[in-house]
Amino acid sequence: MKSLKTIILSSIILFALYTHQVYTTPYVWVADVMQMVKSDEKPGTNREARIWAAKGEYEPFQVIVSAPKESVTDVVLSVSALSGPNGSISREHIKIYRQHYVKAEKGSPVWQGPPNLPLGKGMYPDALIPLTSSGEALTKLSSDFKSVKVGKNQPYLIDIYVPRNTPAGEYKGICKIQSSQGVDQVEIHLTVWNFELPHRPSLRSMFGVWDPHSNSTEVMLEHKLMPFHIPKDKIRYYDQKYGINTLETGQWSGADVWNPRMSSSPSTEDWKRIERSFPEEYRKMLCNYTADEITGVNELTDSVKEWGRNMHTASSVKNLITMVPVPELYDDGTGRPAVDIWALLPKQFQNKKNKKSIQHVMDLGCEVWSYTALLQDSYSPKWMVDFPPINYRIYTWINQIYGYTGLLYWRVDQWSKDPWVSFGRENEYPGDGMLVYPGDPVGITNGIVPSMRLKILRESIEDYEYIEILKSLGEGEFALNTVKQVARDWKKWTRDHKKLIKSRKVLGEKIHSLNSQEATTTK
Image: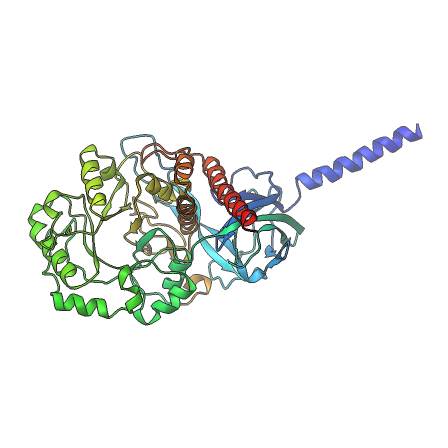
């Protein structure tokens, strides 16, 4: 009998310990960066982060603090250094952000139905509040900044940069979560592959920062995207720190979808002067965003040819225009096409009539870039906040299918009246033209802070590199066949982000294997 009582008592104690573990307050779990964590969704069960990265790459994941039974207060996250085979990745290379929910007052419109439908109005975890290594932030947003209300989730983004001199191997660390209700931690397992991403991104880009902010150039370049304007006296500094591949000269013609008129081109002497105002070693990166969305505006043909002819006669500046290629512009009088970089929307790429002309200008040596704005078809990836995160990451994979070499986006800082609260009642395309947030409310004076969507775009730029590296190693067919497992064209691409992450791992492991074999052979 005594033995039976002991067994029953032990069972009660074990059950109590089990239920405390299951329903602990706070309850902490881990998600990959591609999972959009809604504030009221059921908590997950994953308790460790397993991530893979190359040298010179950023790799983020999410830690979520949930309050299933009662509110959680005084929440502070900290991340240890990651210890590896021959050293460590220090805390200075690890950033912590608290995700902030912003309201979409309206959902994006539905364009002729499926397949790519918006999620609708609601609260979205998008703005990122940078925290110190001790979990502090200079935020004016709310008095309960460190609290999680009962029944809610609070996601955090842990962003790890792998320094270029990091030895390949397995690295381990912990993320510690402290609160008034207790202390918890999750394990971090990072595999560093035996290859390095290039210092300069392979995918060219131009992203519009319209209003000057003290750190805007830093923020965009850190995310491997080129802002429209980089101060000329700091080009070498930024290139050494981040890597620059595109510089815009700023000579706008005035022509766009709303204004079918172009000013006269700068003279040949002006173009010489413009080019020479940039450091000599960077002049090959110069391009001029001359006109926007002028497809079908035939009366501009002569003006476009004038701009191209003057540029090409006097400088190496490339002429960039968002338009479908047309035969009238294949020669500007110098023997070169009037436009050097043709940027098109997905729906223009999908148009059968355009495919021949796009291929023709590529054969002539022109670059072809993709861009997106608003919601102009029912199938391509969209960059509004109420679309799943895979819409941002899959974009460059599709670029690789076609051989497109650049990415254009009109603006990143088109804020509503109160961007930390909502995208605005009048905004029918919530988040379009807005990939960063004003930094003043979170202690970044006259600066900007990134969004979750900007982080995922950076991941997409890095994915593009994997494919480029495999091409350089003679494995282009393998790379593109792997891409086709998740994306065939602008219409056919997976909505399952786990498939994309799996394919990215396949690409990374292939490069790692090839590099390891080469290292063994040369010994």
